Image (cartoon, rainbow, N blue to C red; front, side, top):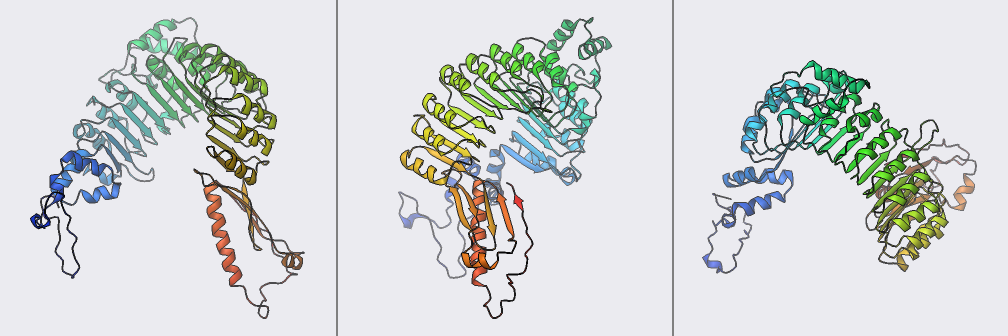
Length: 589
């Protein structure tokens, strides 16, 4: 097709289908006409954009025009960045010179592309906006420095995971990429091994544009801030950072183990940063937040802290510096208590989303009902609340219902305090609630769920997971009584054995297709014959779709086994007196 004929000759005697153009007679159509020639390149590129990767690659090989259109219309390119790619990378990038998103991935067990290949990327991709490197362990600080010297004007997002460079290369990028707004760092082991001296910290002022070091006087002042020396002029150091401030709006740090390195980076970007995400990164994050935020008002609107060492001191630093905070995500933070959450409630009145996964170390004090009560009384703009492991009581629920009129999404998980009385209160008071999730609350029974079904007039979705008192029969009645409500039930596990299978509880949902729970249902004759026998059983605990799939597979296998069972004459394979060893396995998805 394209410049060549769009039809093919028929050598096998089969009839060829020829398209008909509306408005023309069939006799006026030439069999050699290419109908795609009438399409503008923009329309053809839009069609290519709807195709999958393999189909699009195949279309690019049809003709020269299609190859050209495909090359000019690609915006995203994902490549396996093995060492074999380095020689042909320039020609490949010159073909797709309009790409704005480039992703280079390689296994850490293989040789990746080198510094020379990386340094030439800005030359061939002048419109590059996002760059992602994963597993490129053979790219060093020199490669990043050579890349940054091109000063890519449109580069706004960088994501590095499991790579081999450290602070020096990152400082070059931070200094020489003027449009950088989003930085994600994951599992950078060389960065973890870096010492915590100011010269090796992530700080755009630590290196000048040409790679030279700044004066030792500034290093001494920075040492005073990090070490907590009260005799030094911290205000001067703070002002110096702002003179060389970054334009970062989002900073994501995951699986890193040297928290002190990020103090200068967060301090320098605190004037513009809006989102801060820290996951599974060791170090004293109380000190990091206290030093980097420095009590100055920032524009941060989203903070996510997951599996980090942080307590009330960090929450106090957040409350004093983030008056515009709208999303707070605390998951398994070690030392956060109700006092810290109360400080957030007093200062961050614009909070819209709150997610707390309470966890205490060695049974110490953690976030509880008192902190939730403070948030409910002060943050009237709450729209979403997720509480995991928090013993919430009716007074806190009452405060949420009374003071948060726009609360639309709520999840209560992993707590024994939520019972049928709390469910009835939710049904009566939460009039604006649209989505409700009850997960792993063993004291919630069918009466509590039925009360929610009768109340909450705006509720459109109800999700119930691992609540022992909720059955499929109750869910079926609830769906019949309130057809507009989407109910999702995930009840638990299935039990299979050699005797058969039967359904104990299942739920079918429009989204998850339900959950099946099956148990053994052997007939009386076989159970009497095998009274002294230990039955082999398998417990399968999985998600809803997995439960239904496994149940259907096991049922088919058991039915096939019954049809192939030998007759009594040669049934030496079964002996009632023989003991069958027990076998129990758990599969979790």
